[in-house]
Length: 164
Length: 164
Image 1 (tube, rainbow over the protein chains, first blue to last red):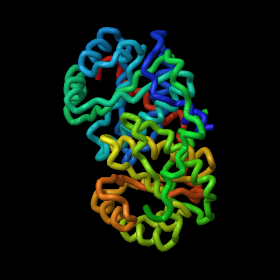
Image 2: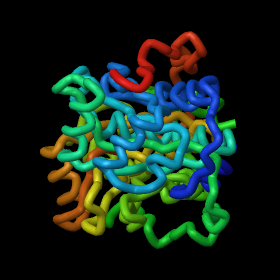
Image 3: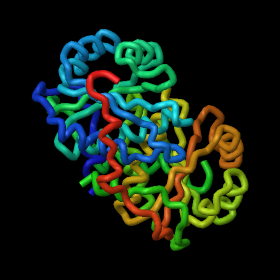
Image 4: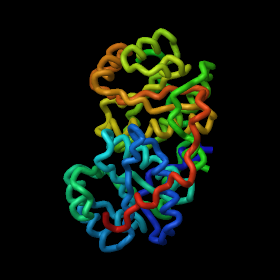
């Protein structure tokens, strides 16, 4: 059931360095590709970084130890074909986070501010009009203190009926 | 497995009018609440519309027959507690789309342009600094021509390795 992965998915910021196979990476990206896109343009593509030097260069821009620690970084990129790049990238990312969870892997949404995005795009030869807003480290989780969502986390008071 | 719901989820634009129970609506919103939010603010709340007159008033703003046809409309609202309202609403929405699919229901991401958002916020007494960017009709699917994603839809050429 989907809800199990949804409850299990938590932001992981410590990773084991064990490699993740190309097949598994592709399964995660496939989940991202099957997310909806505005007007069905399918405008989201995916950059996979596993090279240690590349990860170090990205760390130098965005900080966060887990960027170098995680064996894989996936950067979802919205092309200029979409009018809603933030939405398209966001839903593709959420599908990847859930699929990674389902495959026993940890992940986290690392926000990328526009200044960093410009540097990253230049470094990775991503075309000018394309959009980078985040990146997703993937790897075996290495923080036992991260626990899954429980039913108690559900806040019924955040549901409004008919009017605010 | 998550991938099954991910493949099954397609945009549904025709609904049966059968009611959806409050428990089921809450299960769907719970999935939305368990999506990550920027800095963990949990800034997304949820407005549930089932009243026919309210749905008609919303239809008058956004168009689309399915807005009145679907028994439920869920509007995720980001409060002013988040710095990334579009991302937060998007991932909450994606979780809800997947959970609705898993429960045998259809749904679609209906984009709400800023002009409509202003009118909807006023109509539903949503506070000024809060954000509406979409709405999600939910109901039994009524379009047999909508088919799930197949492995053939996966486009390996949209994966770039190390560089664009």
